[in-house]
Image 1 (cartoon, helix red, strand yellow):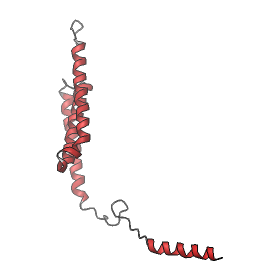
Image 2 (cartoon, rainbow, N blue to C red):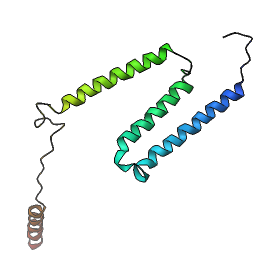
Image 3 (tube, rainbow, N blue to C red):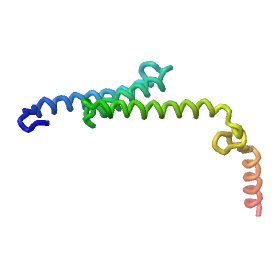
Image 4 (cartoon, helix red, strand yellow):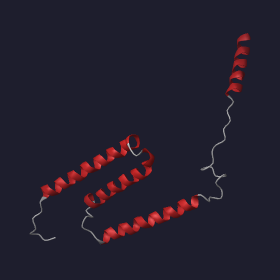
Length: 130
C-alpha cells in the first residue's frame, strides 16, 4: 500500500454497516425459518445460511476480499473436512457395536407406578393403625 493513496474511511465504514445489517437479517431468518417456511428442509437451509454468514465474515471482517492464495487455502481446507465427514457418515451405518454402545443404545428403564403406589398406601395405612 502506498502512503500517498487516499482511503475513504466513511465508505469503508458504510460497507461494514451493510454487512452487519445483512448478518443480523440472516440471523433473524435463521430463527424464524423452521417455523415459517421450508419446514421440510430445515437442515439444508440452516447450513446454507450459516455458510453465507461465514463467507460474509471471512470476506469483509477478516479482510480476505482481495486475497487469492488464502482463498484457495480455505477452499482446500473446507473440502478436506467435507471429505472426512462424508467418510465418517458413510461408515457410521456399519458401526459393529451399535447395540452394545452406551451412546447409541436406548436406556432400558422399567417403572411400575401402580406397584409403588400400592406399597406406599399399605405402609401409610399401617402407620395410622398403630
